[in-house]
Image (tube, rainbow, N blue to C red; front, side):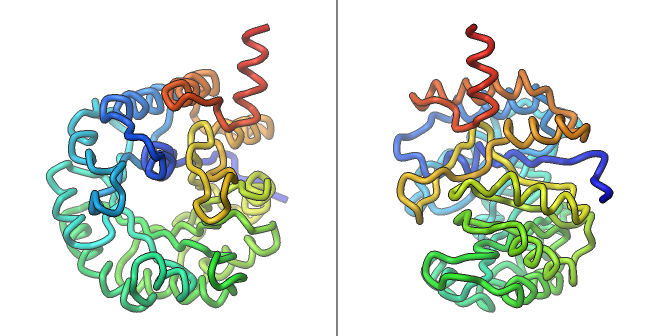
Amino acid sequence: MKLPSKVKLVDVGPRDGLQNEKEPVPAAVKIELVHRLQDAGLKEIEVTSFVSPKWVPQMADAAEVMAGIRRRPGVRYSVLTPNMKGFEAALASRPDEVVVFGAASEAFSQRNINCSIAESIERFAPVVEAARGKGIHVRGVISVAVGCPYQGEVSPGGVELVARLMKQIGVQHCGVADTIGVGTPRKVQAAMEAALKHFAVDDLSGHFHDTYGQALVNTMACLEMGIWQYDTSVAGLGGCPYAKGATGNVATEDVVYLLHGMGIDTGIDLDKLIDAGKYISDFLGRKPNSRAATALLNKRAA
């Protein structure tokens, strides 16, 4: 079994992690979180989302947040742009990467963005073309890749379809997301294998939620396949709106602890990362949703 010698993590905490918070998080706090993440060594940060404030009020300050960041050379700042309106709004903020999301489940696509999978791809096509025309990298994410809150189990064939369509419209990198955290290792590997039919291993990443406590074992299963890029969220920010009270994104701290314990390089300073997670958790008035952070913070206190 040959594991990757290095792993790249994309911290999605500022965007995916905070977007479902009920109370507004000020732009200054979001900016400080991004600064702390890059100080900890993160080279990929998903900062915000250019979507209608009517649907996602927490992201209404997208332009302000992007304008307030002290950019660091070698760090890629990503934004979510679901349509041309969002992309055009994002352009002035000079993102290094734009992200589009498509579902592997027709039921989820209809309920979440009011259109079919095919229609969603048609909506993304001009975004991808415009972004690439301006030299902006494009990442596509396949959501509900192993399970859907409306449809139930999702077949690898559904993942392969979306991967093929994304490749056809020029998406450069594909993320496979277990959005509701129901995946187990074999199912996640099957979803990855489906995406690998259209994207090279270096253009593929995993995005795992820890709803049922499977995110780390699913990460391990993908490491065994040679997958070396993953989305994680500092302090485990982000719940699962489809499973009330459940945890959401896997905590960056837990993944870094796992990888460092296996001798895999991430370029991330775990102590500084824990400080970043504590900063945002203190603001939100709760403890970090990370086992590693909890253990190491308790050790510090002792």
